[in-house]
Image (cartoon, rainbow, N blue to C red; front, top):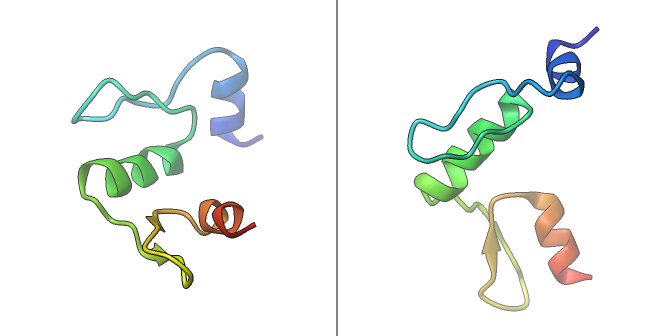
Length: 64
């Protein structure tokens, strides 16, 4: 079984962000958090306005 899944359901978190108090339940969420919040990486830009975000899903929601 996936270790992140097991940890999430046992109330354990994987690790804390080294820059703030954010503690994700999944390792890939920590990487995404650091890239967008602390490094300002927001590669997805709306073609209609100036909105930018870090995740394609968020951009899709914005457009809809």
